Length: 438
Image (cartoon, one colour):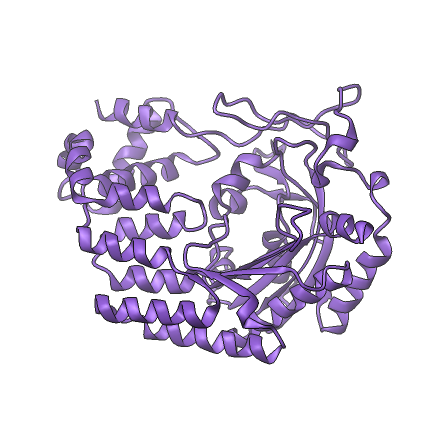
């Protein structure tokens, strides 16, 4: 019965896109995006029909349809170099494990995957932050290290082809994190200005502040992990609804037998038992996850269903996530809520204020910055400030530049110590499109 329950749980997971093979310079057509039916995107060979490029979104258009932006791209890279950033060019073909473990669900579902001759799972890089971080480790660059990049990344999406270019910078090892955050955001604003967008809309969030709120509230550890993981994924309202005591009491019985059978077992023993049952059932990988990862997720979901939340705590979370506005007034709302709820988040509030002060020193008009307590980015490795810069005229709906702080990434890639890190990626085709219209 336990194996059956786990098998049913696994069936709900979706697998990333699969790749049967590619040439050294892949050619992408309008592959179908993975849907609820499980149909994956494929890298297409010659002769496949392609949609008219004039109807494609900017990410799907090939360079001839756009104004030549190479001069602007090189001007951008020259600006990065003058700011002290060393240009790196990591391999296009990457081990898939880090992306599967550390990227959000959106990227995991859009990856182009294949297997090497040794059975290792590989992918075309879906972004450049993880490959650049790996290069910094491989090259043993001294800290602090500042690096830049410009090159193609590959993601399947419903709008068209899956190759587009990103430029960006990553700063590793700076201890003055608030100043580093402000420096990176200011350089993102310069990036937009180089392409003719001098005053983009600025949206910021703070994963660290949200984490401090969760740590100060009486939450079960499993729910803290779930809420942190879902921050930026658009599922927090659903999570909070499921956290109510009535919901927990109504669903705990689903896995009551499993929890009873595992009562008294230490976490490693429980995970080993479920891993063995999955193997007996013939389950190997689901959605790019290993059997061990599936077992850990099953145990977490069972724990989630057995722990509820008081209406008071749920209300505090909902009120916090509803806070928006310019950084100054928004911070006062957060402070007032913390005082009312009697929770101590003073360290995170001080870090927020220090970062805002550095942004003002860069000439950023804070009254025109929008802070949203619920805003995060759909990548699992962010740990502090996150931001997006967008076209103020709405000609391109997606962000032009996006990034933030990710202090946990390097250690999760194998570094022996925590390495403070912050950076951003710029979608140069989107920027070039706006420059061509100016």
